[in-house]
Length: 200
Image (tube, rainbow, N blue to C red):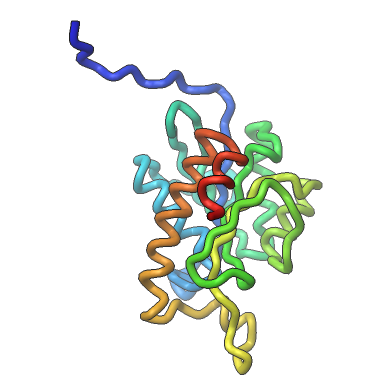
């Protein structure tokens, strides 16, 4: 007998947290420092998540991917205070560190390069440093998206708050799509399979 409806996987009760880091405000839209927001927006688009002003000092959207529930979070605390929003959401949902994926920009990687890690230090990123401080641990997965190094004559702060060059735009658009797929893989399969697939 032909199966008319494809069986959907049962939704798990545990909720994972996917955090895209950035700065709120039109002046920051599309800047290098807001790559985390771009990836969060792409995930919401793919899985019909609708961002709303939530209770965790940011916009959030609930999604189900392959039977797994996730809360997408874009903190509105400005980058350097991102930990306040992440810790509030983690406490509310009792989400352990290993089920919190933080997505952010990285100066040390070439534009468009991805790097997934299960844990680690902040690597000079103030937003991640604040999250480590507020969670009291660095054992949360993170997905770094390369934005390249600033030119020698350019201040680092000015660089991360600048927009991508025309020649870089295809690279970062592609990276945002791949980062969203990497986050989906992490949610479905865990950090080790995601690292094996997306750190090539």
